[in-house]
Image 1 (cartoon, rainbow over the protein chains, first blue to last red):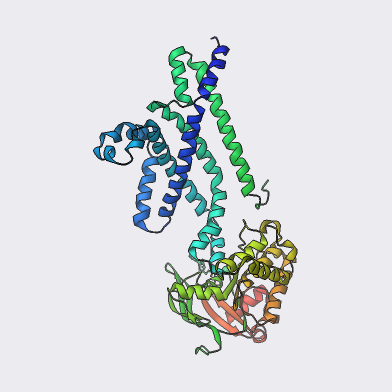
Image 2 (cartoon, rainbow over the protein chains, first blue to last red; image 1 turned 45 degrees about the vertical axis):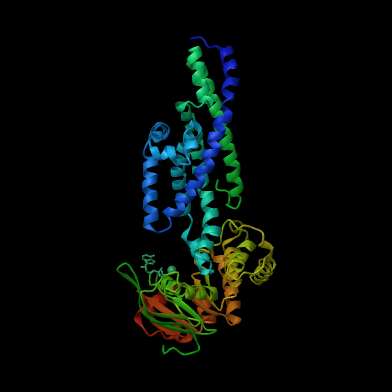
Length: 231
Length: 250
Ligand SMILES: Nc1ncnc2c1ncn2[C@@H]1O[C@H](COP(=O)(O)OP(=O)(O)O)[C@@H](O)[C@H]1O
Ligand SMILES: [Mg+2]
């Protein structure tokens, strides 16, 4: 099998034209998803069943179904509902970009809230008791003791989720968006060279993954400077 | 002996505590006067921790009354807050906040609970670090200190809230032997200053030299309570004798 270097060199810059969109999808849904995750977490650990139960159902549904199906439901399904078309969200939901952001946000929110909950549950009970014994209120304990420790505990799992999210942005290409994968598919349709194009695309994604890992590695090191080196 | 004397700063009357169906405290009556030093000992699982944790409401008792410095402990959050502001506690495994430096550990509660300014909180913190003899460790993280140093920081942290009562739950049990005395020295120093203290400990030398009264617990009951001389030289109950023969045997 021949390997067309010229084609690769020609197509990489074209695919990189989509990196802006890929990164927009990533950063926007990561930020919105994190916000959603925090809200879900607070509801889940509120100790009130009428807040916790819907959260658990939500998390079960979004973690238990393929994200591709979720994207399709939002993009193809929602516009069929009158009240969606009449709502103030229609300008967003009409656009594939808005649909992709919504699907990625809802999905990552579900995963991240579970990751954060793992961090919160991992905080040593003795530390919260020490806070209570010092007279700190429940809220103060949560803000000053539980949260910073939980963040450090959750960070490795969270960085994995950001990488998953980055990979999921490729699904946006199924609803007409021209992110890097979308562009790659267009080039393949024109050149019939799936091997070269998709291999190059993989390399670009690997570089992005590497950069995300490095960034989180740096943050993790900063946050754990107080933990004795565990080698 | 438990008729609610007005000198009592801590008063427990017929206190019972259950974990599920297991009864951890059985009909506890205990009075502690202001400035009194009480040592609590007894076998593992006898309810010592549960007893002192009920005094600052880390555990909720199921029946009976607990009154601490005039506040009765009920579901009322106001009373619980009031009691916790006046009662300091030191734990077996220190429980220092690992993400804060030593001085930040000491400043947190005064700032949040007492609304002290930064500089006030800092001055108080440094004063108590001097008192436990480790001011030079102020900017280190807890994980960088030895066990004995960490426990002294924990004591200083509790003192920064200016408590009228200090509770100690086996403060030296997690320490290497060579560090025990530095912590006991600090506690002895506190006792000399007239702090009201309840210490769960098996350091019988400390009990002998510092305690006004020694309490022996077994299976959730207070079996015996006497001044140290009486307690060690002339234990009343068979269970106390057996326990003492075990802890003093070597
Ligand atoms: N949170 C808890 N849940 C269930 N049982 C407990 C709990 N805390 C303590 N216990 C039980 O209560 C008894 C007394 O415990 P504790 O007060 O810690 O004893 P000590 O401090 O004397 O070793 C033990 O049998 C222990 O297993
Ligand atoms: Mg104990």
